[in-house]
Structure formats: C-alpha cells, structure tokens
Length: 246
Image 1: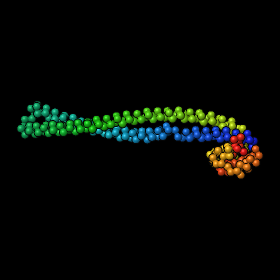
Image 2 (image 1 turned 90 degrees about the vertical axis):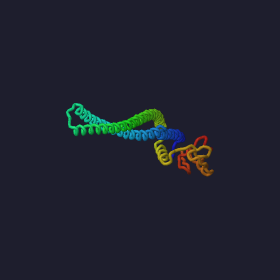
Image 3 (image 1 turned 90 degrees about the horizontal axis):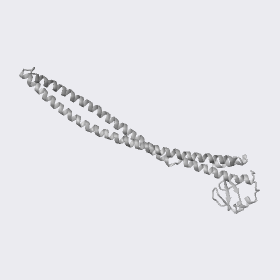
Image 4 (image 1 turned 120 degrees about the horizontal axis):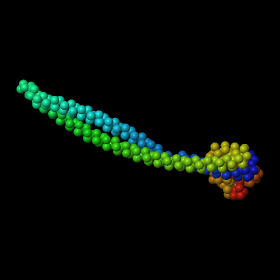
C-alpha cells in the first residue's frame, strides 16, 4: 500500500487519540464509585430485608399484645360482673355464694396470669420496635451514602463523557485527513491488535517495543517514502519519522 508520508504520520496522532479514548473507556468501566455503589446496593438490599422481617415481628407482637390485653379485659369484666352480683346481695344461697366467690378468685388469678403475659409481650415488643428503629436508621443512612456515591459517579461520568466527546471530535478531524484505504487498514489492525500504528524510533517498534534487526532496518530504509511498512513482530503499521534511526 502507498500513502504520503505526512498521511502516515497522521496515523500517530490518530493512534494517540484512540489510546486516549480507550483510557477514558477504561476509566468509565472502572470508576471506584461503581464498585462502591454495587457493594452499598447489596448491603441496602440485605438491610431492607432485615427491616421487613423486624417490622413483621413487631407487627405480630402488636397483634399478640392486643389479643392478650383483650383477654385481660374480658376476664376483668367478668370478675367485675360477678363481684357486683356478690355485692348486690342477690345471691343468698351459701352454696351459690361459695361458688361465686371461688369463681371470682379464679378470675383474679387468671387476670394476674394474663397481665404477666401482657408484660412479657410488651417487653418483647419494645425490643422489636427498638430493633426496627435501629435497622431503619442504618438503612436510611446507607441510602444517603449510596446517593452521595451515585452523585459522585454521575459527575465523574459526565466529565469522562465530555472528554470522550472532545476526543472523538478531534479524531474525526484527523481521520478526515487520512486516505480511506490507509484508514481502513489502520482500523483493521487496531481491531486485531488494539493499536493500529506505531512509531519506528531508534530502530525499535514503539508498539511492541521490539528492536528491528539490521536486515529489517535495511529493508525499511530501502523502501520508498510512501510505502506503508509493517512491523514483522506485531504487524502494526510502522510510521517512519526523523527519530526512526534510518
């Protein structure tokens, strides 16, 4: 392939811009905020599950407490009713009086037992409510931390995208100065090797960093200035400049 030496030298500018674009793409993929957000999202999901479980437990205890308190009220109401019957003098039979007094005593014992149950449930519910509050606080704190990381990520991505757009604009201008066949070869080699062209500097390919043999250097020296030469080692386009050592 033939191409004017100046067009070949522009490949070095194009390669530098492509390397800059690659570096920006790498930065975009490896922003520390991405890993930070991913880790925080996993922790948030775990905390959110723990909050739901704690809320469910607290809700169950609230219903259990309400049921126990209702049982206490029922027993108390029955004891109060029996006590009123006893106090009213309506029951005169000794046997009935004894039975009523026994029932009232039994109801009071039952009420005491139920009140103990209520107190035990209340203690468990208090602990459950405290756990819910603690988990919610941790969840909300983590959400705020994740939001901050997302804001930092978005700012970094916006800056990278701005730089990438500038690089692409400059690349388009440089690519427009390179013949289509040479640009096509460069693109093919870039897809294969990551870098499509490299400078020959001091007898060494700057793409693979391998020093060329004397025979290879002599072949390149003998080649016309507009001949597109390739590195025998990495197959990239070798761009000759005043620094090539020819």
